[in-house]
Length: 351
Image (tube, rainbow, N blue to C red; front, side, top):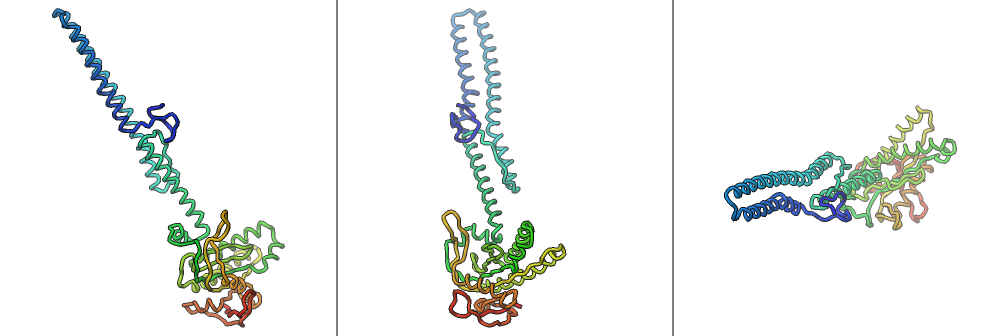
């Protein structure tokens, strides 16, 4: 077994020498042992001098002084070596730990300290490494989660303040679907389609985020987004309409760039509907996603498909119109009957 084992806290064959034990060992070898040796040497010399004449006694006394001098020098040297050894075994890992803490304070989560003992210092070092690993994992989760939701929603969910197990929410749902997608796919190289589709989704997702919405999924060339979940939003209808307008503006700007590059321009239709849904983590035990369930989802999708019938870009349902707080230029269209609904649905064209 090693006095100062190198390795982790569970190193095999290593004794757990605490810092206090080390100090007692150093004190024993640096102070007590030399004193005991000196006492034994003095006792032996004194016994030898008994009954001796003055000359012989003087010689023994002279030898005793030399022996004591050697013992004192040896004790001092041993004390210095052991004290230095003890100081280094304590201060070196603490200096490394301090430097690593400074790195973490500056945002460097790759900092790591070698665990060189299984005492209290080793336990603190191992705990620090574990803490940094946890921070790094949380940072990775933040970055990964941030790809799907806005930073505000991400922080709210990770803080535990938002329940994702399932609840009823009044929300506004937005569906956007590219027109002529099949024709574009058939007439264009695969790489161009993938790059174009990713660029389109990026533009639309940024518009949704800018107004507090959450893109739930990309389905082929279709986007499903929600406003009012998982974070409550009293103005979810207004924000959804504002996002739809920005989505249309971004599409026009993106098409201008594609046109200058000699690429095909694209068009889309957007459907907006508000209603009560069940929102929460839905899926299997191995894979889940935040999703909406309810009639409102079906109606929003059906309204989006009506853009082809009316030759429009953005359609808003009567339910969404009722929830709007700010005035929006809407043109009433004939009520329609959508699949899955017995009653007709009021539809408005967003100018």
